[in-house]
Length: 136
Image (cartoon, rainbow, N blue to C red; front, side):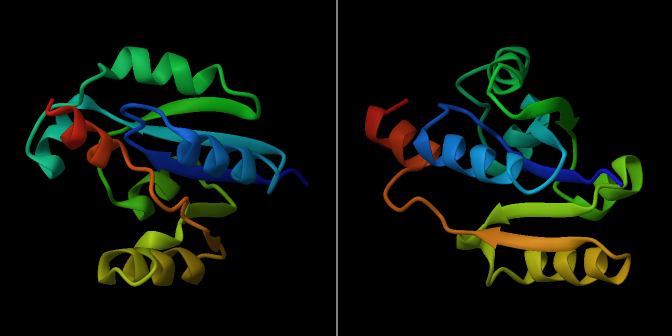
């Protein structure tokens, strides 16, 4: 039986932390599907639009080794995406592990048999930090 892994992010100003997360996630199953946040979603939760438009971010992520498919992430709710894709594993950075919201996603996903993995965050790299440093 093949297994599907799902991870998601904005992937605005793609950096080595994103690359490491995607590479690690790709090794955890037979098929990696990556959700890329839409411009509207990023604007909603970050309060500003992304620097790189959705179509370009989608194309960049799709070209990475190990990515089988890219889907638009229109909601931060990982359970909603599970209802759509029925993935077997959900992978996220451990910088969000203590988040009440992410623990609720974990609880709901585990209740339907999804394995939830929080992988080590790459310290010191962040699209938001880099954008703020650039003054953009």
